[in-house]
Length: 83
Image 1: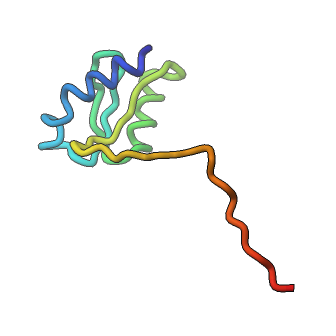
Image 2: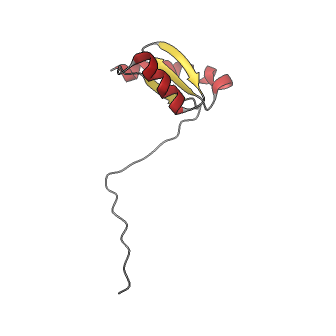
C-alpha cells in the first residue's frame, strides 16, 4: 500500500524535520520528499500541480501525534421540548 511507504518516510524523518519545519506540511510521493509548505492548501495545490490525479501524501509535521478516538456507537443528542 503506497500510503504506508510515504508514512514510513515521514516517521523516519519527523524528528529531524521538526527542527526547521514544525507545524508545516510535508508533501511526499513514494520515497521522495517533494517539499514543505506553510498550509495544507499550499501542499495540496503543489501535489495536484506536480502529480495531477495520482496519489500523494501530505502530513503536518508534529513530533507528538494526536490521537483521535471515534466510535460509531455515538447516540444523537436528544433535548426535550417544552410544550
